[in-house]
Amino acid sequence: ARASGKMGGDGRPHAVKIIDIDAKGESFILKEKALKSVLKTVPPDMKLNVISVVGAFRTGKSFILDLFLRYLRNSTGLPEKLRGEPDDSWMYKGGKLEGNNNAAANDVTKEGGFGWRSGRERCTTGIWLWSEYFVRELPHSGGEKVAVLIMDTQGMFDSTLGQHLTASIFGLSTLISSYSVYNLDKRVQEDNLQHLALFSEYGRVALVEERKRAPTEDEWTSAIDDPAVEATGDGPRPFQRLELLVRDWQDFADVDGDLQDTHEDMRVYLDEILAERNQKDLREVREQIKLCYETVSCWLLPHPGFEVIKKNFDGDLNKVDPSFRRLVADYIRRVFSKRMTIKKVSGRPVNAMELFNFIKIYCALFKEAKIFPEAKTLLAATAQANNMNALQSAITLYKREMDRIAGTGKAYVTEKKLKKHNKVCRDGAIAKFEEIATMGPVASIRTYRQKLEAQMDERFRDYLEANRLRDPFSFVAPYVVPIVIALVAYVIRYVLDTVCPRRSERCMDVSDFFGSLFFTIVSFLFFHFLAQGYGIHQRVKVLFGRASLEDDDDDDDEDETGHLKSE
Image (cartoon, rainbow, N blue to C red):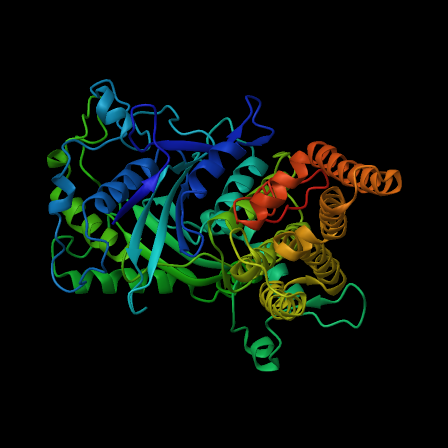
């Protein structure tokens, strides 16, 4: 169930801060190297399940995330059966819970998870990502594996955070994750839903703009073009899953009773929260939430016990209330089995490095945390990042397919065959681009397609040149004529020296002429080879498949204009 990832100085996985907030609480700072160090470890063909927990500060977000980590470390990675009582044996493997920053904690428990502590003081600042990804099997997928990433966020609504910064933290977390857990204290209140609506306005605008059809250069293209979809509101949503996780819930009919009855209580409570209201503002909030998320769910957890909230709590899970342990074990097994949610953008699953591009774009928009980005600006940024990913994926596909017959170490092929293969690879790359580039203005998509075609043209010229260097006849051809002349001159001189009378000056003059011709040609070739030694050496290396086509490939860097270089 576990996979490799970035390790700390002691070789252990750890929390990595990927987005920081300055001391004044006014700007976001993307830690690009740290983010890339985590995401680049995920296989490029693996889908993502990005789980984040957001909510008010000092409500146990990091604590629940460390329970997530312990479950992932100590489970098989296969979907768990959800009937009957949950197996909580994983909870006690590994000793005391990691991430404890209380005074009673030691260095081992402090560094093994996301930091948490009891008391009033804030523990988490910025946005953190666990350095290790976990591999889980996606339910009902025929065994498809998914990379699970765990993300922690700074607590909101404390005395140091303004409303815009609070909304921005929630917004960034929602944009990055596929499974947003909204951690709430005791109940879902109306102001909690209002905070949701503040950011979900982006989702509403995204949904509307994606479905626009206008015959202009700024026309938006969309995968959602079915009139029935527009009429019913069905179809891909901007975000995947929203979970309302209510902590310290006090209204269980019987917290230790049958799990099915408890689940039914949760469903009833969610229906009550999202039920239509007569008041216009309350009704609009609920409509926005339903339009923005593919799935909205709810889970209720009891108080973990008074031992947990003491400042000397040492992370011993045996001190946690049994009712809490039972329901949190039931909850976590569902999070990583039935409720697994794939990260998508515009209805298409994205891989780790594509997510990296999206995060860079989003952080640039949220850089000034005092100003919340307009919904249309966010949508345009998403479209730009999506087009960049489409370009990168297409050029990577083109290069991989071309390398099959013309890459490093391949034998010489005829130019006709290479051009035919190039056409097939080019058509495949363009089809890949069009498959991904499904959102944003048509003019913008056309610009990125032109960039793709220009890059493929440039790469094909490189392939042609490398293939020409592999042609042994092409390598020898320029030297055939002078070598033949030199050999003929040498033979003629040898024959003349053998058969001519020694006293015949005319015969000797002719012999000296051919001897001088031979010496001149040989000398010229010698000095030519000497001057062109490095180039000839490179040609020989290419001929025998020891030199690569390009030495300056850079998978994920950007050029000065901000566009991704191809692989």
